Image (cartoon, rainbow, N blue to C red; front, top):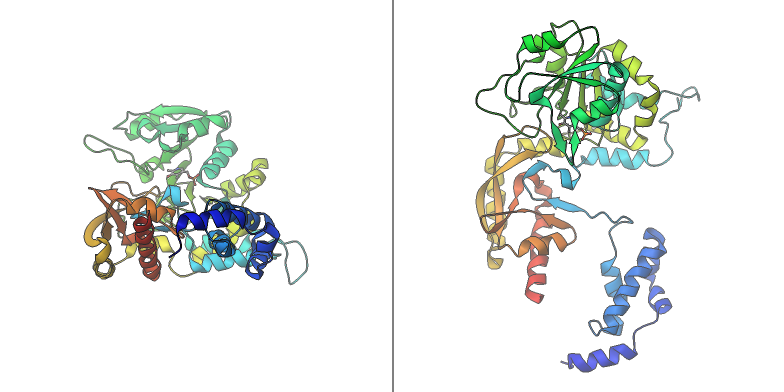
Length: 440
Ligand SMILES: *Cc1c(COP(=O)(O)O)cnc(C)c1O
């Protein structure tokens, strides 16, 4: 075993030159795939480690190769072991394999605005809109914009600029990151008519506020909190009797009722109960790409689609492709996580913990959540592999990164949000983290 010190001294003299390292055919291939800049950065970092005595000169190319990102993006692939099904900080809904394939196809030249039969210009996104219309037959027409906030902004701008929107004080919601629904409404020129109190509102409150200046009554789903106790709200079917349109911002993007989420509003029910328009996100419970869904009365949707601002909120071909595949393809990961059988999760946790007993793992029942996507307060029974807390950072620093949650002095890797086909990868990641911790 050579003395590390003298090896370091030798290395300092013998740091391989950049062009010599870059001549390694594996790095040349990587440069063609990822771009020269990323590869050069990795080589420079490896040379620095060699200079510091951490690497032998002959190890520089291998180290540079190992440090290269998976793709030419600073984003990292993450295994979501948080137990939060729609995790805002992890990019909300992960796309299904079908949606990823569709995105890859649409990334090249594609007939998004061309009719291949006639060679003439075609309507953009016809396939995605048809899939959405088919998924919600109660909607007279549908439109897709950039996100839920854009859908609500377009509705408000198109119908209520210079007019009033009636909204319950109990539904003056902040969604997250400082995004407040009332501020959005006012920012596009609507005046808010607040009715009721934080905990209670009645139909008579709405009726008294509706007048000639009212554009619509807005019903907002409090998608990230619950109010309990002495409360009352007015359902869409009662608001629908008022002489102005009802707009329902359901947020979560559930298109039809879901048996596991009985309290969560859905587009079909809101429309059937008389909402003129429904707005929702594409990347929450629907499990698709970031998008804003606009569904409802054909005359209103058509008018909004032709509004000058609609162009500024337009989605791109990648979103259209992912949305269509989410709507027509196999079960999306969000739905699969929501519906995963708890007994199967327990079995997986037990098996993984058994294989990792030597690094201090065990299995435990846990409680997962729907998350930023809606269904506040809903608890999803789940199962987790637990590890000593230092694994939390080691796993985050691994590639792929694994993000769990710390609870009662243990790191929990909650399996409800980990698809079973990622178990092998999770196992390898824990092994690598254990090695990193042992080496540190
Ligand atoms: C999430 C949400 C929004 C915002 O949608 P984005 O897609 O994040 O822009 C608006 N309203 C409600 C009720 C929501 O839950």
